[in-house]
Image (cartoon, rainbow, N blue to C red; front, top):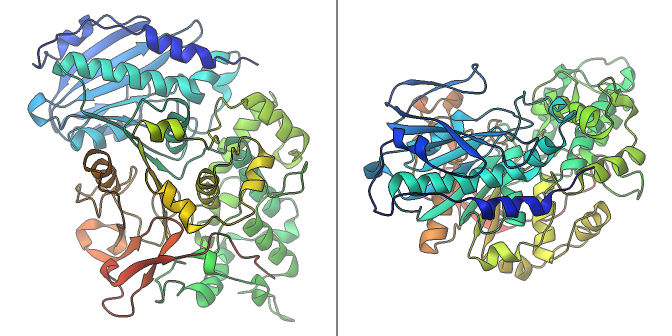
Length: 558
């Protein structure tokens, strides 16, 4: 086990750059002449809008350049055994909005995410992304074998040094530093976002964290658990054809939790007291129903795994209304969180590529996983006082129907921060969510940190609910105002001290913007929730207001 927390700050402090002092744009090619310790700028190329861009570390991904920009490729070698590839994309000075945006990755993704860079530079931001310190696929953790420094790079170092170096390149190219720095990421990118706030609170003025994989050990155990629950006993397995059967029963009971009958989603699962026993097969019935054993599987999925050491909840279960996205409860289903978790335990924890997921032990294996992680990858520390004290603003969002990272993971973390609980161990995290927080506790948090839960959204995007609101990985729609674009809302909060009160999320007809809007809903700062006002168009977010909602999930099946 190797821990190099102290090395990151030392390396960052050592970064020095010779850059022009005048506020004038340098030529793109001149950036290859920059001198940064332990850094090689391998290419600086001017790109024209409309050109096809291909990833440097993986030739399988392409995007179309949305604007003219300078593309800079950089190799960082901060310590022996560490190689981090990164890129910085720089719009022309007259098109630059003065912002720097760090962008995140997904899973174990060992490639530079050019789609995130393209979205950022299209806004007018200078942007950076890294390969997290290795080359590899999203669900492949084998990069860690024989490469302990890659573990630290993946955990935090690559993102932090990408930020430090990216800002240096901005200074050199434009002849002045950025006015504001932002980070935006979802999933593993959301974990990177929270890790930055916790560990490097001075890197960014504003952070956007979506569906974050921050409770790293417990999350990976949960992804194994849901597949175990469904696959261990063939008699208990729920076939994919029955996901919709369960979902229709849920919607019949809970489809109007916001005051109107919603089209295909549960607006607030915390108000849903669904009992799957209503689907019990009658004598002689074999379709459109569940056996008693299958009903127990449904309840297990809603409940989530239990920590074998304490007997308490290890990670929240999936919410009612998420059933059409339950492909994750099979080893080869979509979304594919199981593949990430399986590879995690095989290579990070147990060092056995042949490990059988059915053997996961929720006592000994969890202890090994915690010891191995040692806070390097996980981002569960709930003391954000340094980030807040520096004037930082943090917006987090999470889809209620997420079946890759259960949505309760975000509400639990937000609650711990509101309560001022450490939450650095599983026991502390379980204890911290046992008691609801007063509204005053959340209002203190509202000064710098707000969580928006998204009804019917799956993992980062998609799902039956309204899921387009300016977040990364969304459908290609233009940047809108702060009410409809959550990153713009973050910018307004940082730069004008205008905190987001509501965000409008949109669902397009057939998920295609060109076909028009199907409906929209109001997203509210948690624990507030959107509710129909009683008058007006039920498909329009303007007819919904924010009201206080419940903080804890009901006991389902009781």
